Length: 371
Image (cartoon, rainbow, N blue to C red; front, side, top):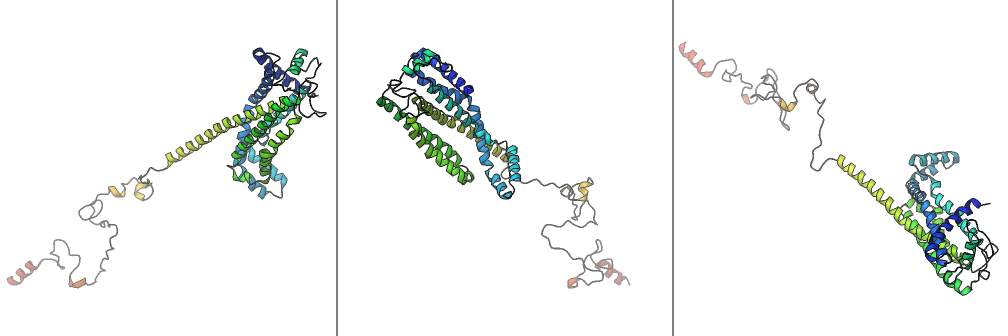
């Protein structure tokens, strides 16, 4: 029924067993252990790009969390409109919620396929998908420090071949399996803690009750489940679990470091662009004087280029009013017929001696003597 899964899994394991069997021997337990471990590494290498896409999608979803919360409040009573707006928001930001599930969804069939292939390594069987009779016999007879790879401590109807049928003993099996169960649980917890620490940068996501429940499951329930469920799993599955978590931990470190460097570079470029547009320290802002006066629009010289003559008027025109200094008090001209202040005449005509009526005082005296 699931041969499309069983054959690829058995083929990858068969290739690695051939490679390591050439070095350590085909019947060596180390060759079979390394074949299982590198089966995991091959799968995870294939899923590297989807994993990077998963991390980027999760980052975008975290950035959109405040906007998504606003949409939930706005369309609380209209589920159809809410779904449409959510899809529109995700499309505009290039986020794909299903992208984060792809690596996990692919690993589940591989786990099922490997578990089924290991179950089929039974004494007297002539083939096991890509493995022939000699290779089946080699797997059954091999051991890893006295522990059988295809056997579990506690057998069930869905379990693998019993430990007695494979010719193993319980003590050797426990000596190898117990440390592996503990290591698998520790790696699962460390991997989950690393992932939760990344989510802590987004308070909105951490405040979500569903996220909090899922984080607790990842941190405590899953690692405990690996330790408790270890006795029901064949030894090869424990090697699969340890190597898978070890790869995940290293991959998270590399990918997160790369994405953080990209984000820091983007922020640095944005900051440099803002600084280049900002005025330099001490620089005066430039004013646009166009349109301030009619003369500027008509081609006349600006105010600071107008010549001032000796009378203080512009353009050498005596009739022009003198230019006012900033802060000077306004000068009130006397009205026609008004008496001068203090008995002194104001505005003496030039060349008349400053006396109204024309002539000076000397000329008036000479006229009286002649008479």
